[in-house]
Structure formats: structure tokens, C-alpha cells
Length: 262
Image (cartoon, rainbow, N blue to C red; front, top):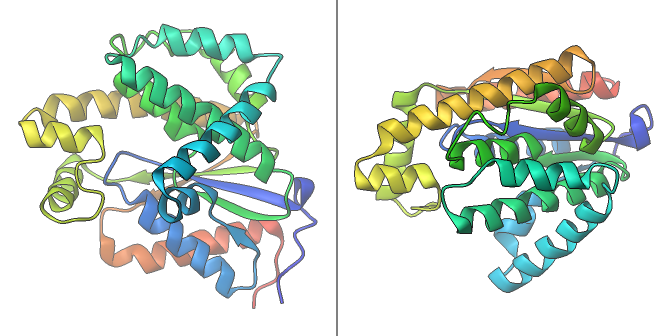
């Protein structure tokens, strides 16, 4: 029997994972979702489900629909995000289109999930989407320059109850995991860092990625201080600790929900 989540806003809680490619977002998010289900908590995995269970054309159509919902849902600050995205001055035009679609897609999907009872687990959410813009920016600090406006407008698009799990993993371990991806079959070559690793330019790319993540970290900390989100730091350096980390995160979520221990 699933627990009643009526104690949260709208009976829902959104959980998103934030970290560099290779930090273990997808793997840990799936394990946390499974752990919560084993405790009788209603769980959905929207982004993971769409990205892994649908054909490419169906996936794109679904993302476009949610992106339109996201764009329509923020009329009061939609112009701000258009200006912000353009100000990020993406190095590649394709990145501008791809990450813009992803931003509004996640906004729309999180808004919808925020109105549905249960825990909604996003292996990559709004903060990760902002990181993507920062990583691809030709002037990485430009988009983050007006911190007050960014914080205000970010708060306006967040779901009512959001937990952000920030995964801490060292650069050498990131490189090791990305190398394993390239040499194996799982998601091989899909991230920009993997492509840089293939061409031998991963170190400057990692430095840029880490700098962009630091900016997102500051934003997340500011929003936590204003009690707009709950921020949880997780050391995900050792994959042997995945089960322990998943159980600890499930404990945190059930505590926030007020769900009694099994």
C-alpha cells in the first residue's frame, strides 16, 4: 500500500540530481526511486522514462509538448529567460537550440509533476539545465552576472517542493568513468565531455565545466537559504557506496514527507 503524501504542497515532491557528467546522476536516481518504491512511496521518473523507453521521434514530440507547456506557463518572466538564454552566447548554434528546448521541457514537466501526488525523480532537472548553458557559454560568467534577477526568476519556475541532490565527485574519477563509457556501450559519446575526452581536450573542458557548476552551486545555496529548495550534498566518489547513498537519500525524502518508517 502506498503512503499518502498529503503533507507536501499538492501532495508532491520533486527530486533532481545535479553534477558533472560521470558523477552518477542517472544510476543513483534510479536506485533512490527503487528504494522509495520498496518503502511504499508513489514514485515517477519522468525524464529517465522518456529518454529510455520511447523512440527518438516520439521522444522529441513529447519534449516539444512539455516545452510548449513550460513556455506558456511562465508568461510573467518568459522574456527574462529568452534574454538570459541569448546572453549565455552558446559556442555552438545547435547547443542553443537543444538546451533551450531542454530548459522549457523540464520547466513544463516539473510544473506538471508538482501538481501530481508522489515523489518525482529527475536524473537531470532545472539546475542541471542551467549548468548546460553555463558550460556551453562563450563567456561563462555573463549569464550569471545578475545574481539577484536570476535567483528571483529561478524561484518563480521551481515546483512547490524541490530537493536538489548535488553529487560530489573528483575530476580524476570523472575522467575514469567517462573513459569507461567511451570504451563500453552505455551512453557512449553522448556528453560533450566525452567528446572532448576523445579529442584529448578534456582538461580545459573539465575546468570550464567545474566553473559553471560552481556558479550553479552558489545559486542553489542562495535559494536554499531563502527556503525555496532543500539542498543535499552527496559524496558519490565510490560506486561501492551507491546502495548506502540511495538508502540515505530515501531516508531524507521520507523524513521530509513525514512518512513513518516501515
